[in-house]
Length: 267
Image (cartoon, rainbow, N blue to C red; front, side):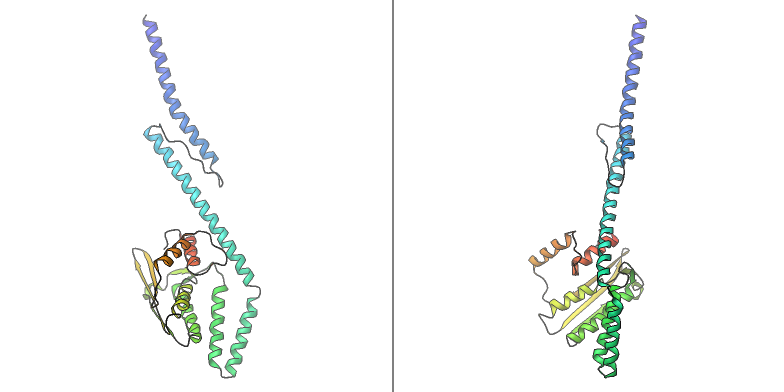
């Protein structure tokens, strides 16, 4: 009788340890298999139900890591596709940029010789604007250079609108050495000019920049009639649309470039 009880006890212990080992081995085996499957186009997850607290934490951490890797890979792929599209677009526009620059320089010199200083300066400013927009689109620029080129653009537009454009750029000097993507403010100013001049013979544009909690903030405002709630809602929907054609310009272009360059928390 003693041996029967001992045998049953031993069998129970063996069964118990087998069950424990299986409960540990199975999720670890699944986790190892998922790790082996983790590739650029495969981001598996493992079941994390009915597990011990330790194994649940391990499986949950792996699932979070897998989803995070998938998000980052997709983000990088989208950025690469976007940058290749921009590069192709740039190459199409750079068929012979030196021809454009040389032509503008010729126009500038001829106008200067003829004492048409207004046309001479316009040709020079346009040449600077083209060079700034076409050269090395992927490079960062300092805010100092960005605002320098912006002022040249505003001067050029002032000739067209007969000095009806008035701007006030209020950015602390200590921020001007920070780097950003180029052509960040020009589309905003152009938008203010195009829509603001329809309502008034004068447009006042204010650009304010400041730093707070490690982030840079900029506002671009004008004295136009503003925007209706319906138009604002439609604008926000366009900005939230992640598809961006190579011909997209203005706010959507800026929003996508900022998100792709710095990450999603840009608004």
